[in-house]
Length: 379
Ligand code: CMC
Image (tube, rainbow, N blue to C red; front, top):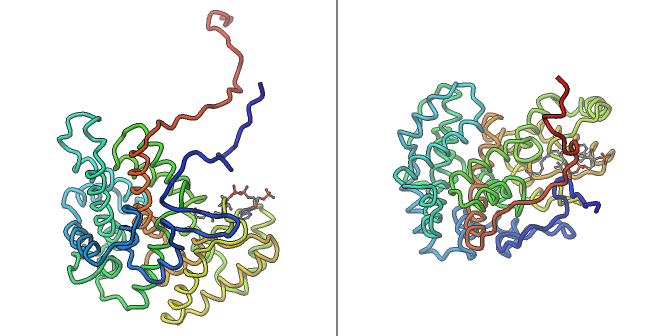
């Protein structure tokens, strides 16, 4: 019987989730029922992390408690730093963060007698999620500083998550506009149902492997330019084009070569990504703050031309790439920033998968040679 193959699992519904709802008809995204743009405009990232893990926004006591725990686990552990320092200075930051999370997992799970002990209870996995969420900014910030030959900056207890992240990266008190833009990006990147990296995390969890292994696998999936790597790739495209005047000839050549234009298109949203206007507003504020109209002109010109020719809308990576550039992050750091945010969604999915687990093991249709035997080979 002819089996129907759904290449790329396109259109396949594999499970239920209560964490987020992506609606392709309305191009909307809800986290636990709340529109993502509302959360980005009103909530600190810590509150959104809490929402993804617990299903409700935190009370002020809940938020205070989470913030206290987060502060306790902010500093870069010596052993994790030592693991990072073993890597070449020009290792890609995605490989660096993947290695650091793997090291964190090995350290945290040291002493667990067997692979069964590592799986973790719901409470243990929540505590691991908070620790990872708290530890990632230091790992990412150190990554940028190490690349630049700068010293590690210790975390500050008087700053909330987003401000402290920027402090540890740049060693300067960040402006409110910058903190707000960065916080928005963290909220917008946090969760997106069964995207490739989240699905990877769920597949790994379904084998009863541990949360750290699930996150390491998810980081590997996120690295690809068809997924998270696109925010870095957008900036390379902007660098390649150079200025708004050069958009038309560049696009003519790129389309003639059948290149995919990074930061445009989406597997689910075909009529626009609801996260874009909120991030675009943050980018506009940064453009004004840093007086970089040239970058906005280039971005607007490419979007206009590409939309006119192909009718394909920009996705979140399109405004977030240049926003991270203006804040001062090096281009290869953009996807690690996505990790620091998405780790909240991944770990919420790990806990949801673990709570009602079924081993994820699809079938394949074989199209290789018919059965044959070594003995039939002629010498
Ligand atoms: N540039 C040029 N053509 C495109 C693009 C693009 N960015 N996106 C889609 N198309 C064309 C594609 O060539 C194809 O045309 P045709 O039917 O003539 O062959 C058609 O549109 C359908 O594209 P597809 O690749 O089959 O659609 P998909 O749903 O498999 O792809 C996508 C979605 C995100 C992989 C794709 O749009 C893409 O490669 N975009 C660029 C990379 C990017 O920005 N990725 C970030 C995605 S959003 C953030 C995230 O989830 O991580």
